[in-house]
Amino acid sequence: MSVPNFLSGNFRYLSRPGVTDVNTIISDLASELAANGWTDIGSPPGGGPFKSPVNATDGSYFKLTLTRVSATALLLLINDMFGTAINYDTSGAQQYIDAGGTEIRCFSGPDYVVVESMRATPEVFWAQRLNVWPETPGLVRPTFVVQYGPRDHSGNLGNLTWAFLNLRELNGGFSNRQGGHVIVRSGNAPGSPIGLFVTTSGAYMFEPLDLVDATYTSQPSYLLGRCPQCLLVDQQHLAGTEFTVPIDTGTTGVFKVSGLGASSTRKVAFRKG
Image 1 (tube, one colour):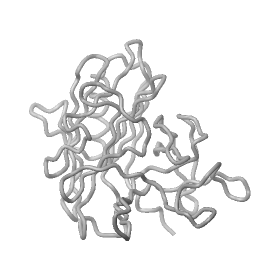
Image 2: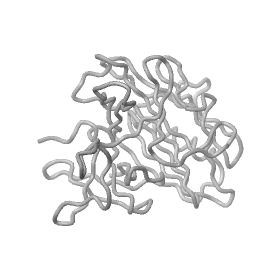
Image 3: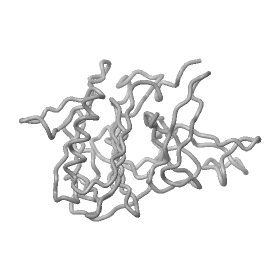
Image 4: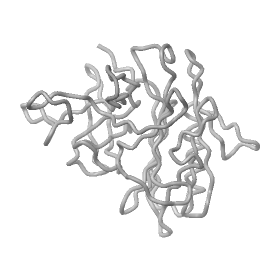
């Protein structure tokens, strides 16, 4: 066996308590992304845009631009390799922190960046290049970059569940795609499992977050890819809960439950160790 492709490669985690100015987030991300092989292509450098490593197979990458709106408001914008804004609001997504200080959690790797503002109601920004293994990137369909932002560029709060990921389609449009395996339950109806997801021995189960072209307007439904360094867990687990998960024989990974809301009885957990 070997570590699943979407769980292999570099990953980093940083927690910063008591952040009172989003400039701290920008500074921390500059360091974290550089350690993951991202490039600051700003002029002058120091605040981005930050360019992810280029995929050697299809040349895909995406860029993250960070703008300080105020001490407590950060604007984040994602563009794909064609320059298309991936955010549902193409002017970017805002994320707030509290004036009195907020813990910021950053999960990052060559193909993804997650910024969590752990307010009373957590606000999460998330962008990833989908892992298409064992397919060849870009062979049939373009490499998809998905993005989620808690607010629009004006600061209006959106849906706070992980199912509202935005991605670029072939025609340049956008769509929401709910992730997770399509499994069979009672009555042979495809859907999501109901209740606590455990083995017969009572051990917790974990699954990849797969993005599927599930418009149901045609068949078959295509697997667009899976989110790197990310697993789905049962909805009962609180944000910040950590699990040590076997990912290969003798190899484990530590995953931390996100502050994103549940969807289809599932929450998202990102890798931290």
